[in-house]
Image (tube, rainbow, N blue to C red; front, side, top):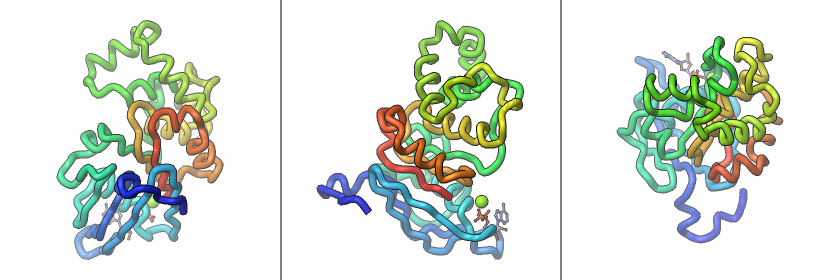
Length: 209
Ligand SMILES: Nc1ncnc2c1ncn2[C@@H]1O[C@H](COP(=O)(O)OP(=O)(O)O)[C@@H](O)[C@H]1O
Ligand SMILES: [Mg+2]
């Protein structure tokens, strides 16, 4: 556990307090509390069905929960997933989230553009002029995929597809990253030690679930 430093620093990062999630009669998370300070990496371990994905879903706003979630002291309760993403709260998905018939570059661009279909289309057609290429390239290099930008997502190995998911979560403003089943510990090490990633304000380490 790193030295949390001054009181201001203590309030930074992710705070989840007393998170409870029920699916009907099933209590998947019961009063789960977790603090992740800037620069810290926390692992959640447990057998299938333990509630790891449920916790990621709750923190990122994809399911209803009881409890309190803040990022850098900003309350997340009541915010939909895309608003949480804008504050820098990012996640990956346990199973495929990619557009299989788009290139790796296009998959990452799609994750960084909140402007709807028109913006996406313009980016896909005009990506060489869009100015976003440098960001995409740097993000892909950060996860070790610098040489597959033009490859279709469906042609990647499962491990590479997972890393594209990480790039999609990292691109743009990222303060807290939650990795759901990233396959390998090396993924977590690579992402957290990447200069590009830390330069992109991923001050809080991944939660590896
Ligand atoms: N959408 C859902 N509807 C009902 N029960 C669910 C749903 N998702 C997960 N569960 C149940 O919640 C518990 C936790 O599941 P999950 O969060 O997926 O665990 P883990 O990610 O640790 O494998 C399990 O008992 C699972 O069956
Ligand atoms: Mg899971």
